[in-house]
Image 1 (cartoon, rainbow, N blue to C red):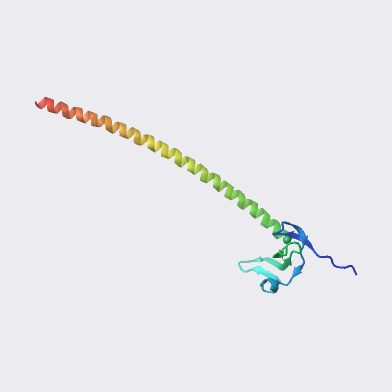
Image 2 (tube, helix red, strand yellow):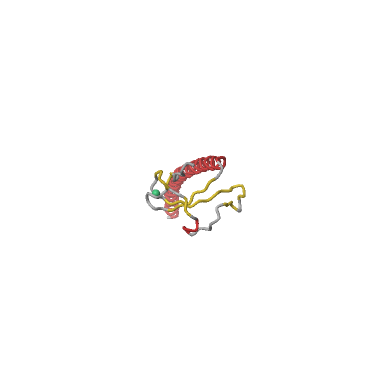
Length: 135
Ligand SMILES: [Zn+2]
């Protein structure tokens, strides 16, 4: 009978493929049960394992899911990223529109102030004229 080899998998701490045998979930203070699902999404079922990296001594959890579920997750993650990218573009565009609007409002305010100055001058002239006329 062939001797079992220790599994080599990706260690999230070393960030490389190393020997990471399975250890008991209770060793890292997790419930010892391995079969799980999300209560809110019962179709997401997974098999949980605790691992110990022999390179860095990091323990971590892995889960086994169907390839179809993993593919769906990758597609949803990509779409989510696209949505946030589009949202960021909209936010930048709205800031640009806001700045443009503020510049336009400032110009309008400047024009209104000039009109007010002109009308004040007219009124002053008119008042002066009235005074002159009365005298
Ligand atoms: Zn490691």
